[in-house]
Image (cartoon, rainbow, N blue to C red):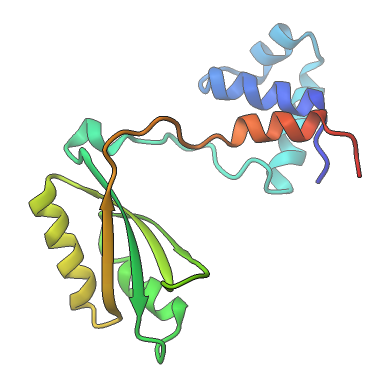
Length: 159
């Protein structure tokens, strides 16, 4: 889907003001309420806007350790079966099939380094993961930068 400058402004507004109403957005952006609503509906239907849910910060409720983990899986099971088995572990925040020397990449939240070891052991215990290699995040400089990408796409002429 092609997005334009107004789409980007609408998404920026709701990113900066997640609890605002469509009416408030129309007033601030100087656009008809129906236009704001139709833009939101169109972007939601196209999957440009994938969620309207809060994004809890694990560090703020007791999970300050973040790690990225490369997983080598039992190939006989397939990626979907492994992902289904790993989904039972709540500390696994994300899991992606990747190219390269590992099969999956996971983002994990843990209460401590010792707790991270427990999570890694739990993944191995599913018998779907053969090897796990983790790196602990020391500092996050930025994340979730999709809004800036959307704004750049809106300002780029069609190819």
